[in-house]
Length: 115
Image 1 (cartoon, rainbow, N blue to C red):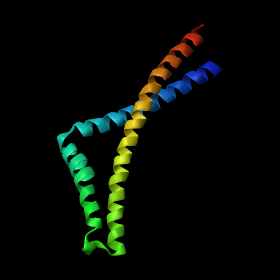
Image 2 (cartoon, rainbow, N blue to C red; image 1 turned 60 degrees about the vertical axis):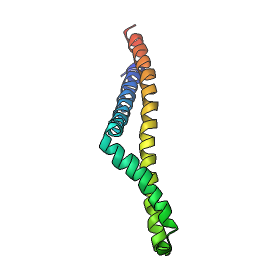
Image 3 (cartoon, rainbow, N blue to C red; image 1 turned 30 degrees about the vertical axis):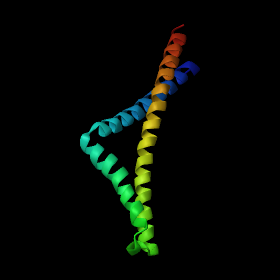
Image 4 (cartoon, helix red, strand yellow; image 1 turned 90 degrees about the vertical axis):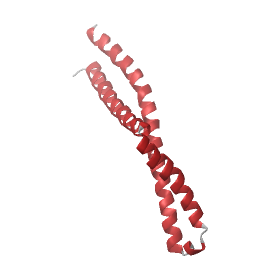
């Protein structure tokens, strides 16, 4: 395999990976478009449950270290899931831009290989 063939193969691998990342982002966007997901996750979990937990932190019945740790862990779970979703969206946007660049590189390499 010559150098150009290796470059073409590497670009094709990069394209496939980027397209898989975009597909994962698109799955998340379809979830966000679903009304049940929007209500259960975006509204109930990310907003209402997070607010409930913040208020629960100051509840006199919830002041033991164990209960405070449990509340904190629940809040961290909400933040972790939201951050995971944000990461998927950001990776998808970056991969979308990479696809454009990789497709251009791929076309140039194919042209060079023919010449």
